Length: 376
Image 1: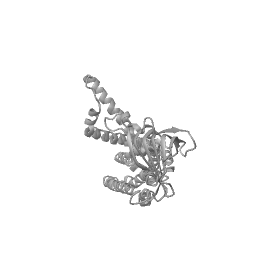
Image 2: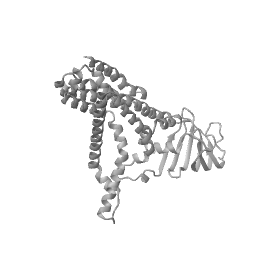
Image 3: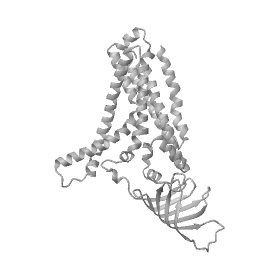
Image 4: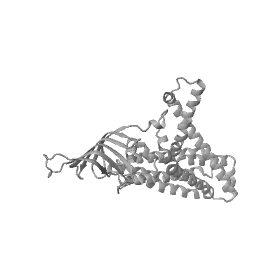
């Protein structure tokens, strides 16, 4: 690595960290201003001293935003390299360093390579954040302002949840702590929705590693009654209660928790989402495919945004740098907005794959054309 490479990389990393700190700091500051009352409402220090109340409040705020920063980093990871590259080029242009390099015969491509390499390295940090850090603290990321982690898991009712075998599951209450369904009703159906049987049980408790279920577990039900609803069944026949029955279904406690906390899926790793897709009903599978495809597409779009901005920032005419930065913001902003629109259409107006791929198809060739302009 030559001296010029080390110099550009050093400046880019410093500017990247500064821009990242400013963006995260601004987000946290504005969020605290808007939601400060929720933090104070979520804490109860009626009999505590003012000092204890203050430190308790600070602990809650720091704890909340320490984990929230992982999500904020994902949100701003695309625009930060462009900002850092802009600051780096402005500094080099102001100090006449870029002019000296170009006068000595150094190509604009040669100046751009260290920035692109660093941006790619920071993109790996985004992958580390998404695939390793966030999946290990999902409950903490789902906390609301002033909400304790323990209060996230609470009893819920289960209403007509569809399964991959077309059956419907109902329960008056689901306890996530004990993994128990109460007053269970399972309506078995054909592919066209015709009911074929009903399973009624007082409760069903999830047990891991029993039987040969598709998800290495099953619901252990008690006080079970099977009712045959097929046309050939005898309506006068009284259903015979069964003392205990094992019910195999892809609908496991992990999926129930994700259904009740839909935002949790965004914080799971790619391997976890892929496993959920194996036994998910069609409607849920489309939403999971959207998350997977847009996740990979976002990494590519982040690099494309940088490649679109570099030709504006690396200029042989220093007097045009300010106007070029304006056009850099316009082009990068257009890429950002277009990506957001297509990602929202993915899974609804467009297929998940098409919605995720369209920003890459539109702006990828444009980025290549823009890079080719560096030769001039």
